Amino acid sequence: MIDVRLEAPAVESDTGRPEEQAREVFLPRDARRRTPLAALATRLRWPLGIYTTPVVILVVWEVLSKAGALSATYAPAPTSIVKSAVDLWRQGVLGPDLSISLRRAGLGLAIGLTAGIVTGVLGGLLRSGEYLFNGLVQVLNTIPLLAVLPLMIVWFGIDELTKVLLISFGAGVPMYLNLFAAIRGVDQRLIEMTRTTGAGTWRLVSRVLVPGALPGFLVGLRFSLAYSILGLVAAETVNADQGLGFLITQGQTYLQTNQVFVGLAIYSLLGLVADQFVRVLERVLLRWRPGYEVA
Image (cartoon, rainbow, N blue to C red; front, top):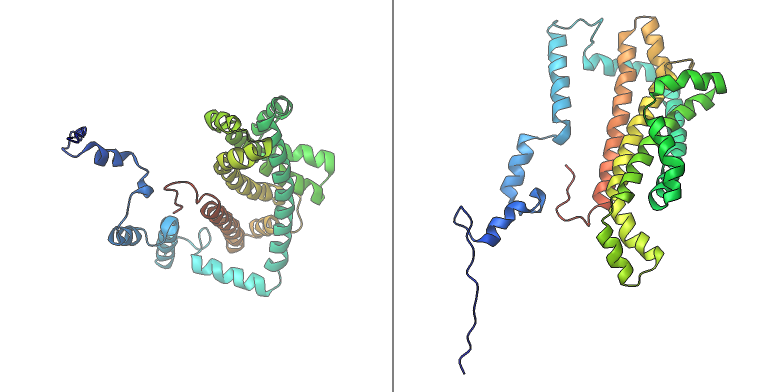
């Protein structure tokens, strides 16, 4: 008996390659196999990754300052700013102010994240939770932090509570918005497929909803960290007698530009640290995503 096997011919693309090879163009870029030489070339083009441009700006700034193109009164050299930071630390000024600012930011961030996560989960999972929280948060999202500050001062005075609540306000709103959208954005076909297998509520949440909403949660965390720093700046530049904002205000009052830049540099470093923290979480928690890679 003759064994006859029919095989469909490979469909070639416009470039003359078989269809299966042509389909590779639709793969995520990071999912394609990269040679060590290509990885080295990418690293040489951007030796410091996402920080290449900031470092280049600092180098150009330093060169222009040393050449006299930039006045030290308005834009002191980066090395001069670092020297001022060391002097302030040795004088016992920078350390306490930095500690107080970090304590305020940490407490406000914890309160804001807790409120944003709880309300985001309830709003994303329950229709009643959406009706209860979504409209209010959408209204709060349009109110700037500086517009809320005078009202908080009227309600709570100029004590620490006002500063912590302002930071919490800045951190909680973006977490709710991103987490709510992430939960509602989970593919309904996956949910229906899980239910048809007889999985319970806990298995549905842990195996489908949590992994599906995790990228959106991390985006919300990134925004919450950034807005908590903005809230810290707003809280400490008004009616504060301690903290980095007070340090900047004192530098402005006495025309100490270096001191102002020291405070701004620390705020910037806090933002970079927050960004790196989220990137580490993305590397750990999103390893299951095909082709996912953080720069």
